[in-house]
Image (cartoon, rainbow, N blue to C red; front, side, top):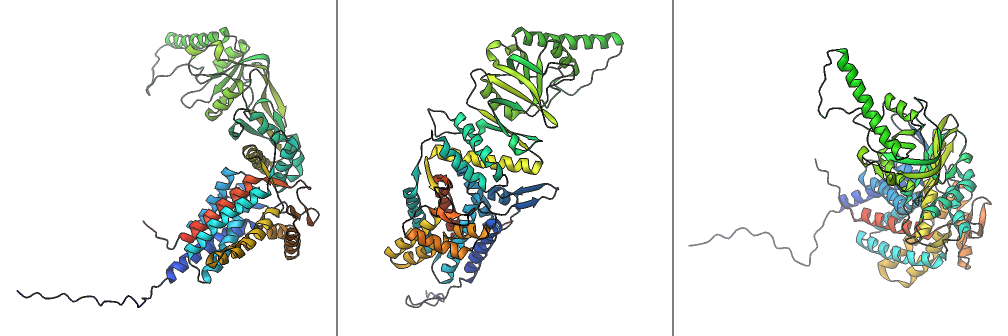
Length: 535
């Protein structure tokens, strides 16, 4: 039986090369890089102590004034997927180091610009990506060689570092007050046994409108932005306080299911009211029997935590009541007071109470706050009462203080300091340029190109300060070539000085984290060659 051979495909010679259209891939890569660079350029003007602030207006009319990179990018509605990666990059820097959120985005933008010029020259994206990986590892080694070791007991140096972080914020004129406050609050929550485990949740920031940022204070104890319940004439100050944190309601019980009770005559109504009164009185007698004289009552969603009747009896028993304590604050309160939350009246015992010298209501500005001070066996926590003349200043003061706290936490975790003012970036640029000459092939070409990208930080710093960026960066490069490792831009004097002597310092962790995260992000963007949309 004869077989018919299928028409075979034309056999292509192994020597001949077929043409593959890579235009789409190049276009996608270019679009991604340009979108990400646009985001980087948006925050570039807010870098450094002389950087501009951004006013962010949301659809519902809220206005935020800030120059914190992470806040600006979080509030921006970025739609392009690659540009969203830069928003995530700044968020990562915020959680890893707390400061340098603008630096990391500006650095990523400069690396992307160099990547685009390399890709345009015909370098393969994988070669560019590998060169970046080696560059990041080398850069961290250079930064570690530059770093100055630090002792956690050296309070002055910690304050200098926190002040550098605050100098680029809207509230920079208050850095002499906020920097020591940030250092003292972090050092008060550090556990000597585990100094590297600093939890910023142990520092509670309470905002209160009125006054100025000068009135901000550190409180060794607890502060509640609430009034004491006065409706029944209860006390507003208690000394030698025995404090209970309760999670149950001092109000008449309700049925478990939705139902209505029909009362047909007055005697039944009186009986219900009498039972309610007896039920509440029974609870308050049990509370009073333990000697408790301050009650912190958790907010309830099922029924009223307290009623007018229960407040009346609590006032008669001379018990100070603070109600509507948020559920997520309970852990912080119990840790501070060294007491246990009480979930049921049957478990109300004296050993579950906290003890303090004084609980009082204090008038501040228009409103009032409750302060608990002199806590016995207080946990490793602290409270900061932040004041401000308007909400915009108040919110920015809180964000700035958070950044300063993060800087001090970085120094406690990794005890090395590094000069600020663009000094590490110029040193990186020079050393990586020298290293590129020792390498060979495409790698050398890529690293030489990327080494120049680090100059974007000193360039932007001088540009934002209104100086001549080309002259300043050239002079800075010259000083570093002569061996002045810590020469940096002093934006106050408008010239190059030894920046360590000027007390412009930052944690090593901020710089190393910025380099690592920005190179990782750029490598990821380079590896993308197509965007596939799915329904």
